Length: 265
Image 1: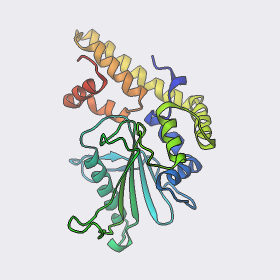
Image 2: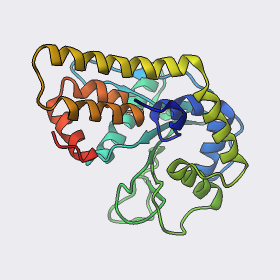
Image 3: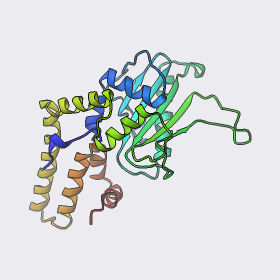
Image 4: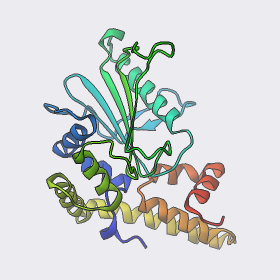
């Protein structure tokens, strides 16, 4: 059984709720991009983007805007080989969505896709990896397409970012409170844990998994049931509900998740 009182900001569901507090999200972005933001807004809550039933749909964790820039913040607990391609796909669909609303190409906002990873996506020890399009023949020439992709690593070891951002990443990684902002985050996490609606949501998903396990037992499907239950509970603990849902229909993904969590399938 999941101990709801031990769920942290590393849980995707918790992260999404906390970062839909405009003041906390704004301060998070200011630390990441290292500049002040006047204000932010959320055009749509849990914005779904899906243009074709045969295409891969996505649900953006956090999508918000200021006066000139669109931001997409994603918390990544799973170690995916295709993370850079995911960032490209998210970027492309956000641009399509903006253009569908009648914007000209020149009117496209600067768009920053941010992945906060609880692992090092490039194994170089950095806390932050920032990518923009640059000319291969002359790195002084920037493409200027108003796109930026940022990968943050809570396990970074280099002295490569300002202290406020390092404090934020440390809080996500270990829950350590080191300044006023991380104290505000921790207070909000505690508040959310006590929210009856949120607790009910987590417990409902947990119950669904138990019900599926009972049905499998009645059907005589014993082999691998304990491993699958363990995997499902860990996915809930980490807030990876999309992966949980997808793995029920994708055996290859299920095997990948077993391997990631070190579970014998």
